[in-house]
Image 1 (cartoon, rainbow, N blue to C red):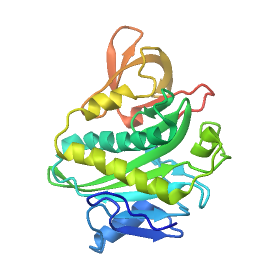
Image 2 (image 1 turned 90 degrees about the vertical axis):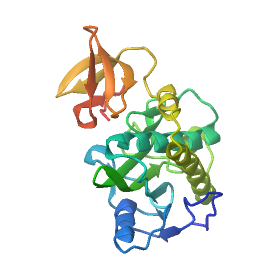
Image 3 (image 1 turned 135 degrees about the horizontal axis):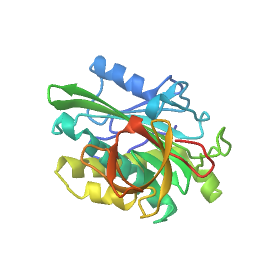
Length: 261
């Protein structure tokens, strides 16, 4: 990948580019262990052989066709109980980046907790791994995978910028813009900006008042997304009229093609 020089204070000012690695999150953790990572250090690879996603899923991407990177931040200002606030900032930064490329498209959404979706297909995913020190976050490794030029996928629930626009993209400028958008949202979080959750709910997938199918504890249910609370739980209104809160491992969206993500 070409050299990138984002217009940021610290995010992406130190870039480690690896032609191939198992996982950029793992590489970032090793850099931290060796005390070689500054605030905002970014690890980028062309080929990730053991990428991880939410719920322990594997993230698969064709070499050289997509963006796979990890950013190291030290959000020591955040208590451990507010970890989801970082998810909000990162997810919104990714959504801002995509909006800059696709325009303010209502089909571009964030699927709880932090996948980037276009209509009912996944355009990218985020995996944040936090290390705690007492009651505070010591450091965070923000792993991001975005489908850019890849045009064939093993599942029908994935798409890419190339498929959506019919264009081929140079990756370095996209990585540069992404890092700039991420830092802008991170600085909002650091400044105590309370608009993040409102912005997140405004672009949340299926947060439109309609009823949708979900699966919880192996059982199907119909629900209407009411909120995402401060702890990051999905709040559903059920057919009974009651609301119920669900954590990440407790509920799954059921997509139109019956693939659960």
